[in-house]
Length: 483
Image (cartoon, rainbow, N blue to C red; front, side, top):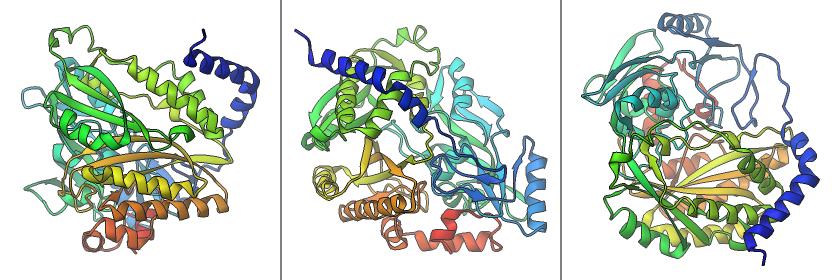
């Protein structure tokens, strides 16, 4: 007798045969633009700039900023440009592309620290640290982003024993608007520390950073399926309450049949067999993403695709139970399968933070709000971040679940307006439950919503004007919310 999963794969195979050519034609479209028009990965805000300047040496970066000031041009700072709200460019600006400024400068194995230039990626850090049995403390789930960009948005990740990135930064050097380079730490030029980290490139150019590392470890993967009502209690007792659980993520269904009800959680538990590190510590390379990329494409188009993809995800992760993975490899999640280009629509991210004890009621209210809307919700991943208000624009006012939400939206004016309306509605639901939202995404939330989510908003923008009085460093985010 054919199993449910076999039937699903049969349907999928027929779909691939019948729809393959159309799929690849539709989803590989690429927008044309001239050399001086830039956009971020979402593609909703193409902007005409003055020039893109790449600097592989410090003197070139300093020269670029000084010349921009002399010519009365604004400077925007860019890494991989995965922030989606125009945080890395501005009309008529000089966009400083930092990706060539990417050397690993120093690795202190005894102190467990690394100093890198800000254009280096987390992959560069991992490749330097892994041979010495060291690993990153805090980063995103993917390793493709630059260190400077990650500091600028104060990232968080899967590790539940360390909170946001600011906790792991010892110091950094900053190029200011007037050409001066200063060292910033918790004790030196300390005024800049909580502003630049999570400051979206508005206070200067981060040149290099000293980060804390930790020991690489071997984890055992454990996946549990459960209804959403049980998640908060499960997390407190079985995850946060178990010191051997080092990393954690969860997913809640966006499939129509189980919308915002069905869940599975994946825990990374410290293995008792650390002696097996050597046979597992080679860094994984991303490969074989065709099926996940294809199914994500089907999910964008069809509700039945969402249902099948959800069942496939649960089965895939359940099959990993008992597998070993190192800390470094747990922080090298697939990212290529999410790459998507179309002239008609795009994928945008939102991220909402809600207190752990508010989760069940929050999901009920969010489901009720979205039941009335036609929002193409593709995926929700849930992480945990501890309370930390070191950054002026801190998103974790208390211990929070972070819901990372992937939405597919139309690029038309009507599509943008409709998405903005729905997202403001979702933010209101989040604020109702003492929550906040992440700032690296499109400026759909209102100024009033930002002030409610971030109680130090005025302090942040006043500090911007004090420390960069001529507003040399500029981007769309500041234009919308700070001016």
